[in-house]
Image (cartoon, rainbow, N blue to C red):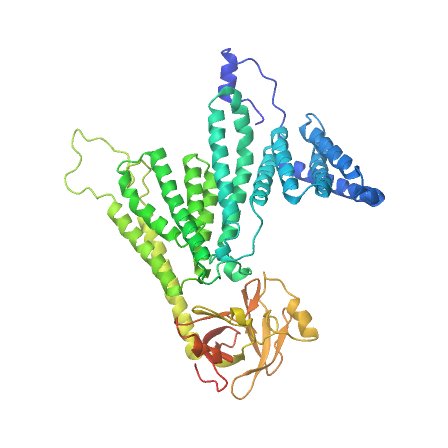
Length: 558
């Protein structure tokens, strides 16, 4: 704020408030950012030179203690100072971080791992109270969430039924809710209003980390990570021991209970008319949460942010909930058919509910003399602005979705009908992950796909190229039966050698594959596909391919 607000100027003119000193001029963010970069450029070589000169003493005696405490104090002085040059202020952050690293090194020499985390967590809280800048408090709040999660449990291996990060994220969410309740209580009284304001940015950073860990615990999502990034989580089989069955049942019930608690909180805060009508969608979401252990926490955080009008965090919580819903695709504990039935059933029930809740259209006599314009009501009875374009827009989206899907179907059918049959040898895969329920993992004997083990120059070429940008291409020759022979990875913009065909690769799991690295089949028919030796494709002259079948040594469909 570079000028005094109108309400503040009026209060001063009427004598309600005394005259206040003028506000400092606002600093353009590019100037601050460039000053910070300059500070890092100066401080980092300075600290490297210091450690190179006195590094032998840094790990012995009190050197790391003195260096850490001194740099933290100097960083606080620079960051809390007023009227200083921007460059000196921006030097405070690198000095502060370097001091924290040195102090952590000193603590690690004399304390256990958890004791170090506890001390750093306490120091983090002190820095939140001392530093005046909101964005620094956000970073420190995020760091506090990470330190607290490290304190309450060790990070486990990525196994769904070991529930990685589930306990840590849920405990952190409970602590965040308690801190928000404390903040609200403090903010109602004048002496505590200042500390409530101090807590606000720190809580923002805290919730960002909690939601991020909930997404990480859910595993890969069908949104985009499943295609472009390596998959994690969500691929475990059904737990066999009674212990893990009991644990999984508990977390499923907790997830569903959190959905219902969030819905109850929204109803209590907003008090819509005929709130009983919201029981059906809450029940449907709770039923879906039974299959997704982290969905309940995401929806509960979403409800909390909506109640407290923290719209940005509410949008982030909604994104986390959509991510968790997308992760359901990679939970191999259930067949795809059952997962599809769960989602289609939930969507159908919600669609029927939406039609039932639609306000009736008033038909008949026009407005009487006593009638007055009424404010539009939502289905739950809460006033909201009218959106006359909503239904036509939804209809347009539905039409576009149908057109897109059917055009893709026509395109694939044309490719199957007119494409050239090509057989690509399958490469060995890890036997432990060859088959998972109704899903079979595929790899191809092609360079650049991340599964083939080429030699010489091809190995170097396989590692070249980025995931983003132009897609990789492989040049292949076909024998008289249409089997791929002598594949070679093409460089960017390299022409196809005479007598060879170009095949375009597809990004998958953080690498590349040919069209798809998965083959889905009917549950209970796993034995049929063990004899697969080739993938049957249809190839167009421009290099586009489509996987249509798996065949054996005789090239006959399995």
